[in-house]
Length: 322
Image 1 (cartoon, one colour):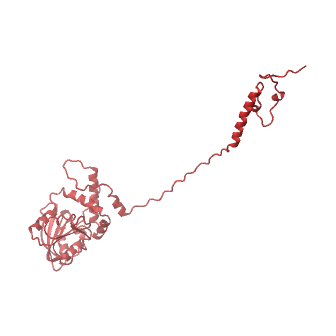
Image 2 (cartoon, rainbow, N blue to C red; image 1 turned 60 degrees about the vertical axis):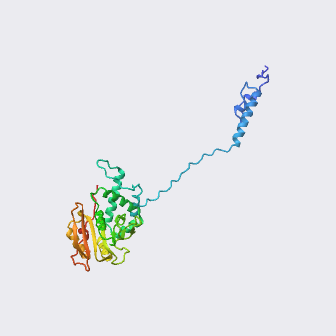
Image 3 (spheres, rainbow, N blue to C red; image 1 turned 45 degrees about the vertical axis):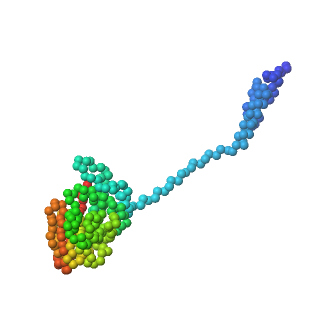
């Protein structure tokens, strides 16, 4: 019997080989399936070959290795020095003028901070030597501004400032009296009287002030008539300040001391201590409830006295911890 060949759409016989298994390396897509025309098979084959060539020419995909990000090593934290701690407390704004005390007004956080800074520095001045305080303020003059801003805030609340009484007494006396103001602050005394006034403090706040350790002023021996300490016998070596005052005072010169009453447990002991340096007690005014005002005269010789603990005679101002 005669075999009848299969015919495709174009009327062409389909080779029986097309029905046999495909040769190795070829896929049915490249060969076609029964019923497909040659034109369609050629078109399909051309598309497949072009795709295969493009895949062969493209570089093989290599998966990227995961990146390891190196974390910067943390440097050990350095402990701040004492001076750095001190300077760090100055970074906040301090008002140029003291804030007035108004009854019934709520105290702001800035005012509380200002008061805390003043108390810290005030206590520091009472519990260190004059030389150490001078070194501290010389390196950090801004501390002095903080201190005196707080001091002015305190003075604004006082019924009277002891330096005002001393100023009035000098104004009532001779303009020829030469004055040495130890611990002058902003040199209010020098700016209030016609006399020659040598003003000393840890920092030269203005042109009237000479910065120094008050135990070692630049004044020559026996060069002044009046030495003033208005709330300035601070420091653990305050007797050295009195000795310096004795050195620069002329014979029979006057020493004026105004202090907080609460610092003197026994005023008589303080008098004994000053007389041991080389002064003679003249008088005192303790009528003010807060302050005591004492007057001494320079003696040619120091009066012998039993050794006393200066810190016990004139106690430092230590604030209560809150």
